Length: 325
Ligand code: ADP
Ligand code: TRP
Image (cartoon, rainbow, N blue to C red; front, side, top):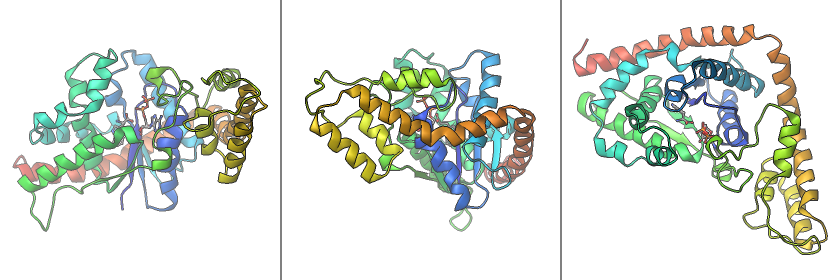
């Protein structure tokens, strides 16, 4: 069973990334042998045009994974660009990918609608993502719900390729499955929309404590008077509280809001205390690791070597299948 997932180095990691992907992906370390995680720096070129920011972000994501529990002895962690073989595979996959499949992808439409350049890279993004996944013969891909369609595209491409070039008894690629937790499928941001760096509504995992507290205290709520019961259905405060509390604790939080008599400020403070308590160990570990940045280089170098060895095997198989080797 091969578990594989990644994140783009395109800005500070937030609670949506943590609950939607990082925590779940790292939990696989205890259940599967040698899960693979990576920083998708080639993908980030579709949105990041500052080379220094890209370099810095790759290091930050690596450090963040280590702080969140990545164990480089149990898993492989690498940067995408350390395994350039992925581009050759992406080309082989491109040649069996129908245009219509990519034209239906929401992500391209959403990102261009938000002002991202409509580049060929952005359009072909799902093919490169399929190559990432198929290169490592992944069975399971833990991601947030917004990536579900991309995994479906990877499955479609793998099936098409297997059908065209593989034999039933020896398919070229493993067909991957998404691993998405419905309960945390979409973590809301401070404005109630999906938390995303592109909406500027994030609560960042690491960084300035004051800014974090300000962002939590600034979570958008309605204008219900202090004395009145507060609506709890669809409440961002309740949704975030549920991520870091037991069912019973969130039940009490909801019951208290429904009673009325206290203002939103109190509920935000309570949420902030819960979030701070939950992330204190991870943040401490982060600060400790940041004092020895050499560990980032070591983890990336070791991961690159191990990932590349696996990638070479799959690429040779795919090359042979199409008649290039
Ligand atoms: P962003 O939307 O901030 O650009 P990314 O697209 O880089 O985030 O997402 C990285 C990973 O985190 C993906 O697996 C994605 O599905 C997950 N993720 C991002 N935001 C959320 C969210 N609000 N809720 C759940 N998962 C999320
Ligand atoms: N598209 C993913 C995101 O924006 C990042 C990514 C690239 C990825 N390749 C992948 C995730 C392969 C899982 C598997 O978050």
